[in-house]
Image (cartoon, rainbow, N blue to C red; front, side, top):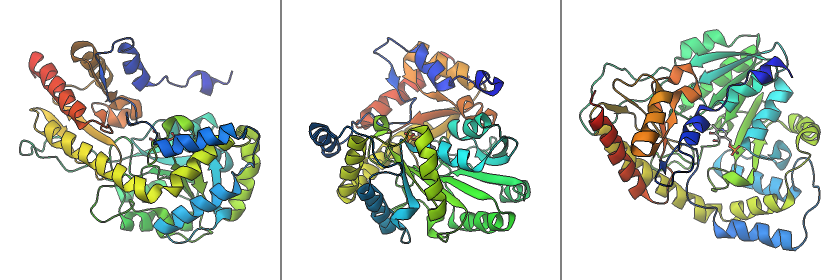
Length: 397
Ligand SMILES: Cc1ncc(COP(=O)(O)O)c(C=O)c1O
């Protein structure tokens, strides 16, 4: 066994979840998914496909009709993208791994903006690449805000990014809207990064799986690198059916990249998963066919969840939280609680509240906690905040 695999850290989110295993009184907000099941029109499409006996291997790059549908969906949100720039993958995380396998080998340098979902930084490490971390700046800890008022969010130090990404950097990894902080990129920041990476010859791998979960009035998506890049730029944009179509368990995603890069990715898919299952792809096709009716409603429900949770959290004495513009997470800290793993375990044990420890996303996020607010019942969020208050009351700061 290679030592890099043996030394992979176990998931700290799982560690907290395991502490609540077998208890049905726990309100769980630890994983990054809604408790709302996949819509019926998606499930029905998969059932119909299975009933037709569509159980065979398929194209490496995805069903041609799905690639066309993804290109059409993408082109409705961003400048036009052709189907030969799309690869269908067995999940977003698989698309990220494929991009990394294609771009970063042993000894190569990968720069990642963190804190971030740990898979993004583990993948290049598994491949033997050297990962340099650029930490987002956390909100000012000393700042006090009015009760019930969310604080300013995390932000990027662009000068640090520009001096860290050099000709030696193979890949710049950016996830925005960001899991866990809710940080989003501005168009100007994207342009600066793209201009810089064009000069250094660095590929940008942009994880935009939360692009539709963006709560700015009038915007259909968060700012995307696809809006400003040319078809030949060294850019891979990773997407997923998991978040916008409530399909976490199906394992279906895609990437958008230059056409010649996608042709090579087809070969790489052969050696990873060979193809995504046809009935899952048919389900994805049904999701895209109904995207215009379904996704805006989902975004409104998620926004209502955010607007339920964040002000209530901000009103708890000792709690500091920013209002996320995108994603499905409230990222917060509680005065006096510096060990996020210990505190998350304590919350499960003492009041049955299940949230993810910031430490799961890197040392930069130690002392923070991540609360996934995606729920079909915002009342659960209110109940959860009451449990947090109870925990803080019984252990005064
Ligand atoms: C930032 C980020 N990228 C990618 C993914 C991968 O999604 P999936 O593998 O379910 O498509 C997730 C899932 O939580 C995520 O948070």
